[in-house]
Length: 509
Image (tube, rainbow, N blue to C red; front, top):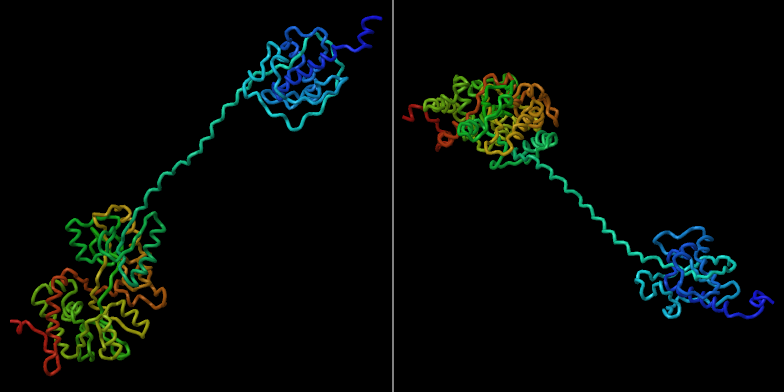
């Protein structure tokens, strides 16, 4: 019997040694890190020839990792753990050993001379098994070889450097919006201030980038409202900016100062009467007012004399343009007081402006001195009144720009806006002040709320200005106290209950 027959019929220790070596190799492979990428069979044979292997060992498990990879069809990704396990493939076809647990194996038992031991490998190589092992490949016939193929341990993979956290983008701070120009503007008070804010200030702020602050104060302003006396004095002292020529109105209703200011509105002191009292013949001139015999009835007159002295001189034949030059002299003042004295006891003196209309409506007076705007509103409430425009004394308001303003350009823009004809007309339709531009006067027809005709109550129509006297605030500031004293003395009743005659030039001497 040949040797081949003996090898096949009797027990032989070679298979046992082969299986023992397979078990050791499998244990070593598991402890070396089963999740590493399995090298191909050819690479295993080239890289892992152990020193002095047993000459008759049959180890089919050397090709198991490659076979597993081939049957799975998808090679492991480079630098990633191989999820296939070589444990099932490491079992010999004729024997099913107990499962192999990845436990440490001593170097003396199974560590080839050219392999790293588990204790000598870096810690990073220790990986956790996959929780779901791959399907076991079909066993192949064992091949005889003179070398034990040991799975190569790949080089330790250095942990990838942690990517720096992306920097949180910092939103760029938008440039600060330029501060809006701010204008503090004198707007008066009462009904006029309400109308001015609604019809002028608010539209200007909406049409521009200017912030508008309306105030009734007089300090720290960018636009001021002045009478003629203040305008001339402050302009002469350099407190006001001189305005560009193109801001001056080309259709001004009167020759008024414009170097440092622009005229806006006028209001007037006028005599009024109840038309029913003079139905047959109505008074039309100031001479009629001072003619008690021709137009009987009492006159309601202001005790401070403002507007009264001017009217008395006009009634006495002094031209409107000469009134204040005449009043500047003692003779002129005496002339005015004498004209008032001729009214005798037909005078009802008042101290409050509202009292003039009350005296008239109560029948205590037939003609009264008041303002054109008061006359309009009273006629709306209590019935018709008529105005005597002859010798009216009108006062003018101006807008100007202090030299101290930090917003001169915006202030000039406001002056141009506020004195445009449409803005002046809009205010006059609310309050019957006379616009100082002809275009504005022509466009004011009826009151915006009541619908009443406004033309008969406007002081700046061409007909009403024909014999008008422009009020001189400077003269009155200098002479108000002395005039009031003279009028008060003249109005004091004597023991008989009648007022003494006003002083004349002769009695003053």
